[in-house]
Image 1 (cartoon, helix red, strand yellow):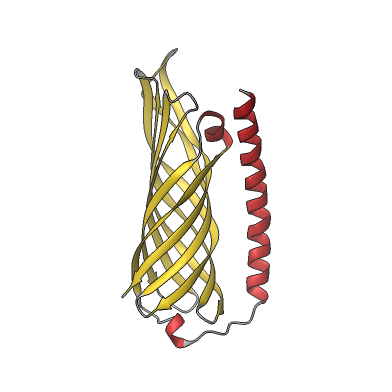
Image 2 (tube, rainbow, N blue to C red; image 1 turned 135 degrees about the vertical axis):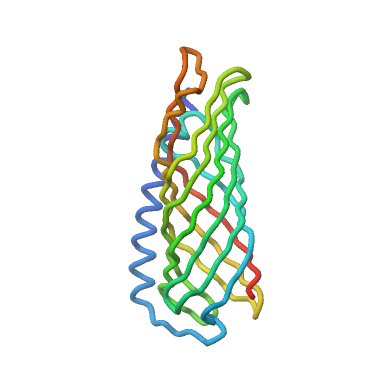
Length: 210
């Protein structure tokens, strides 16, 4: 129990640090000169890729489950020098410390991508958007529930254009899954289960540009 409380406290500290870093990141990027070669921002280009990294649970999720690695599929479209679409499909599975309970998160999120600054072939950006998430919890072999709910995402990132058809990046994103009740879920005291929570993703990305 003490270890779980410590994890929850660490999650809260990480969230506060994320908010502070997000503010500093935006302030620095907006003040930076926008020096950008043409090949770094060809308009109308598409890209497909993958993301992978640590999924750090916070809030109610962190009280019951452990952090783990997650994966995502990425699609991006550059509509203008400033704006684009950054959509991803993500999945992660989290277990409790005793291994008896499990949390699965599957999300589909179309985000607005805002390019803040260009440094040679490096692009600093922020993204934000709403999406749909299927979240399921299993409590032992007998109990559990599943909901499809709405969620909010936001965070900063970097993209490094390696060549004409490849770019590498990093993304730190916060996700808030709005609580929803599964009335048919079975729990130890009857029926009904409210599912929802927050988490952070620290991901590396690799994309093919076309």
